[in-house]
Length: 205
Image (tube, rainbow, N blue to C red; front, top):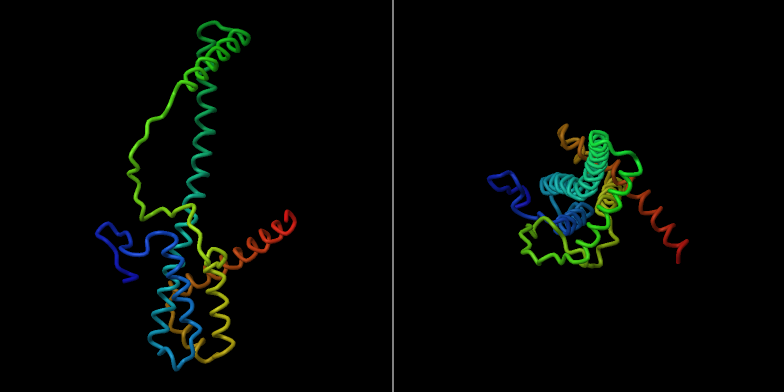
């Protein structure tokens, strides 16, 4: 079910950020179960599935930030090109700086007048709800970071049952070892960010 994908390669289940997070937390909670509660083979599958889902969740929450950065870069380039074109156009028409400023002011006034009278029509939202979360959605797990919890759970397993931990790690292939290392590093970054955010809240409270 976790690995099931559609014909286009997209995940068939747990596509929303919130769904991924809930599933990650649930799988992580199984890692710390005693050996008599979960067999070695099942633990190996759970561990790998958790790594895959955490990696997918990490990529998904990073996508909006990356998109915003790309949008800013595009707008900066657009503004620069537009300014250059306006300067060249003014030169071709024989306008000096004062004439150009006057035309710009008139243009801005006209745009402002049009904006005051413009009322955007309601449009149907064709976006795929499966890929976006309700911004107003709140739940008890909001303050729980799945990456930090995963690393803490793995460390707990290592401390409580070293032989079981070593057996689990040794069965991982190169891909999952790389995923585990990447998740561990990202969890440390998240821990620092969370501590910094908590410190800011204490200052402003």
